[in-house]
Each structure stands twice: as C-alpha cells, then as structure tokens.
Image (tube, rainbow, N blue to C red; front, top):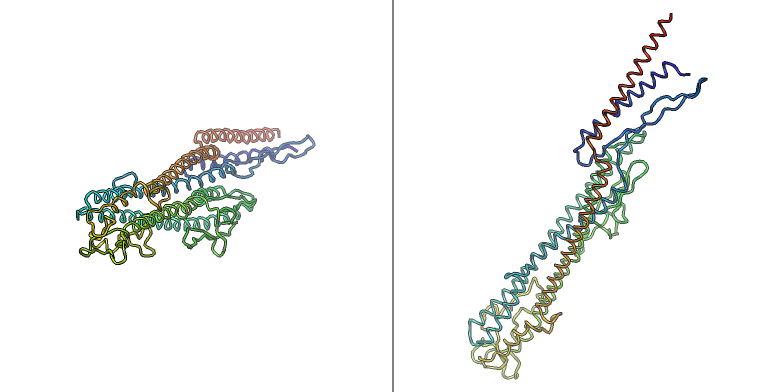
Length: 469
C-alpha cells in the first residue's frame, strides 16, 4: 500500500541516482582530454512495481551500472586500417631509403659510373698509346666497382636496420600481449559482480590500438569481458594467457610463437612491412645488382682476355707460339664468389698496373684500338645484359624501386585517410563533449532538487497528519 515510507524510498533513490549521475559526468569532464578515454553514462531502470489494494504503484528508479560508450565494430575498422597504414608507412620509409641509396639521377650514382667507364674506353680508343688514357680506364673501372660496393654495403646496412627494428617491434608486441593478459584478468575479476571496468577497458583498448599498428590484429570480445587477440590465424592472447613472439633466423625475417614450429604467415602492420622489405624488396634489388655485376665481369673479361696489353716489353703477355691467344688478362677479378655487387673489384694485375689494360686485338701493335672500341660499345649492347645493355638493366632496377615506392606512398595516403575517418567516427561515439556533460549536470541538479522537494512535501504532509491530534 502506498505510504510515506514508499514515497521517501522513491525520493531517496532519486537523490542517490542523481548524485551518481553527477559524479559520472564529473569524471567525464575531468578526462575530456585524456587520450583513449571513453565517456561513461549511467544505466537506469524503473523499480519493480508493487501491488496494493489501491492498484499497482511504481517504486522509483534503480541504478543498474555504469556503461562505457564504445562501438566494437568501429574499433575493429580502425585497427584494420591502422595496421595497413603502419605497413604502408614502414614500407614507404624503407623504399625511400633504397631509392636514396641508388641516388638516381645524380653525378655520383652507378649510372654515371657506367658512363664514365664507357667514356674512358672511348678516349683510349682515340689514343691507344697514351698511358694517361689507360690510367683513366683503370680509375673509371675502380670507380665503377666502388659504386657497386657502396650500394651493396648500404643495402646490407639497411637490412641490418630492418632486423633491429623488427626485434624492437617484437619486444613491444610481447610487452603489450602481457599487459593485455593482465588487464583481462583484472577486468574479469571486477566485472564478475555485474559492473563494468570502464577505465581498465580504456587502457586495454589503447594497447590494442598500438598493437594493431605494429603487428596487425583481430580482437574477439569474450562474454566475461576478456579478449582474444589474433595475429592472422594464431592466437597471441586468450584471456589471462599471453604467448610470446620471436624472430626466426634463416636468412630471411620470419616470426613464430615461442615453442611452436609454425611460422606466422600473415603478420601485418609494421612487422609485416619489415618482413616484406627485407625478404622481397631489398633482396630483389641486391639480386639484380649481383646479376648486373656478374654480367659486367663476364663480358668485359671475355673481351679483355683477347686483347694485347704491353706490360712485358715488346712481346707483352701475348703468347706468339700459340697464335692469337690474347693477353688472357682479366680486367675484373674473376675469383669465384667475387662476381657480386659487394665483391666486384679490378683484377690484381690491372689494379697494380694500368699498362696491363689492353686496347687492341693484334700482337705488338700499340696503335690498334679494336678492343677499346668493342669495350666502349658495351654501352649500347652487352651479350650478358638482360635488357640490351647494363645501363638499361640498371634503369629497370631504379624504375621498379620508384614504382614500388609510389605504390607504397599512395597506399599510405589511402589508409591514413581511412584511419582518420575511422577515428572520427568512433570518437563521435566515445569522445567527451564538455557541453553535453554540463547539460547532463544541470539536468541532474534539477532532478536532485525535485527529489528534495518530494522529501520536504512528505515532511509537511506528516506534520499536517500529526497536527490532527
């Protein structure tokens, strides 16, 4: 039956509910500029009605819980785009470094070194008896080898940097995985009684956002409040259990879960980009430069062996007893294993004495320039070149790097836009509007004043009742 007790109970519930709502709004305002904070809102429900002889009467308001404003689908969308943006940005950074190493077009790049090499042979063909022209060929050849060596060395250093950054990123992944597992345990314990660990969930979401850029991920929300974090098809975190990632070392960058023989085949984010840059992009450039260096050594040495170089008096090093055998002097070092961009160098004979450089193809004819002309002609056509000549092969390498860089840059811009749009949409859901919170406080203040008025009214009614005696 309705009575003063019931009315006072309803008023007391209204007062406590308004107090809680004001505290929640105050908490929102205090954290309006806190990164990753999700605004909170009270969840209220009507009290259970009571039957009486006069009918069914309400019992006021019941405070259910504090609800965190968050949209899981928007979070998933953001993290997917964030991982792709991280991958594109990382690949773009390293491809830009590769392009800088190649340094084309420039006066110090490999293309210019090739031109200087051809030009030196052309000048020697114009004056094959000039010792200075031979010295110029020797110096141009040495500059060409140093250009190859320098590019190879810088690419090797870039690969080493990729490994270091991948190792640092793996450490971050493992640290975040452990922290997420700990937060899972705390959240489950706090929410087991029916509440919501909103602030702990915010901390966990910030960690997951960071992890999405580093490694790419998929998050599965559990009914108990915990999460499962997936790297591709492999579970990294499941509840309070966190696995550890490690790098594999088999010539390439690879990743696997510690204790598992299976590789993580679909690593995303920055780690996936580092893996692709190391295993594919830089390796492709290295392989093609090695092929180019090997082709250069093969063709130049094959021609140079047939020439006559005046290094041992009138007979030179031609063997007249065997006929037109040539000098058999290699221009580049032909030692096994030295036919790569990193190890290409002049032969010991040519490096020690420019007089060993051949210009002609006839025995004891110092004025013969046929060999110098043939070597200068490699500028236009080279037997071992993959695309007519070495310069064309190199231009393809430079062009492919530029194309890959342009693709990575474009992808980065697209995903940066998607991340920005996703973040705006989800911020609209969980972000704090100070004006909205102030309106909420004013509304609750009015409700609190009204509940107080109810209590005052009941007091006056009771005084009236007592005065009837």
